Length: 85
Image 1 (tube, rainbow, N blue to C red):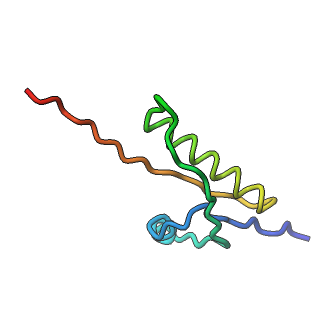
Image 2 (tube, helix red, strand yellow):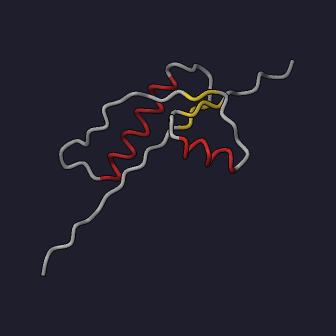
Image 3 (cartoon, rainbow, N blue to C red):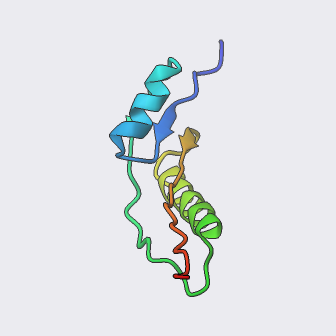
């Protein structure tokens, strides 16, 4: 008997992320957004914040979907203010 196909779960309710997946021909079997506190920690860089949140979202959703492939990501927009001359 062939193995059961793996399920793909998108750990995001972002319409943009779903659109990006569809552009490459992937349709998730489920969409399950993790609800997390996304407050940055003191002295946390944008890169570290995005990595921490993506990992936490993936872990939270994976716990609800045993055996599935879970795709989690996060985006952080950082603006560096220039000093006045």
